[in-house]
Length: 198
Image (tube, rainbow, N blue to C red; front, side, top):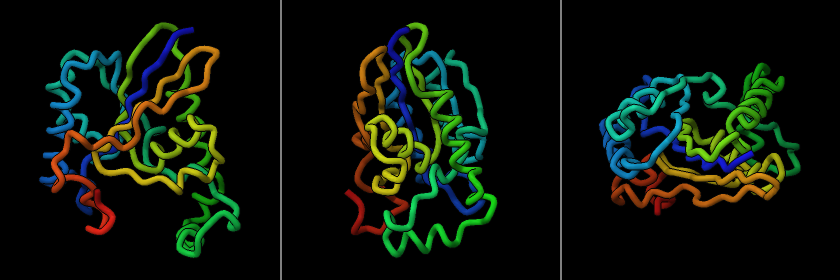
């Protein structure tokens, strides 16, 4: 077995129709500049419009790297925590979820995504996964060995970059989480209220 360096990228800012906004396209373009020169073995991405358009914006920087769309990487709710671990606002959020989501659809998908994309590889490799906030937070929480509800206690920005190192016979390492150093302040955290932006 060998090392896997997994880059997790949240898609750019999206409009209500799921396509990238102009700010989202600019976030993706600046991320492409950041990732230019990184030798990825593959790019995996959600099949949603916002993720697919983010990958298209990265394409020039990632010429020759094969792209693989996957429904496993679509947005989901990775776990349904016991209410004793939740704030009142989180209880309200989970109460509003559909019975289908609450019937283990999201947790099953998240577990399958983790099984498919996390962990060591047959040979040293770097891979890029373009996906959604909940799933990225789930990957990071799992890499830290945190409880399954810990994904709720993390925040990430559009085109924030996280990197996890998976090594044989050693614990996984979160190398970086939600790095937005490649984005100017006006493009950071645009999906959050001003007081929650860094």
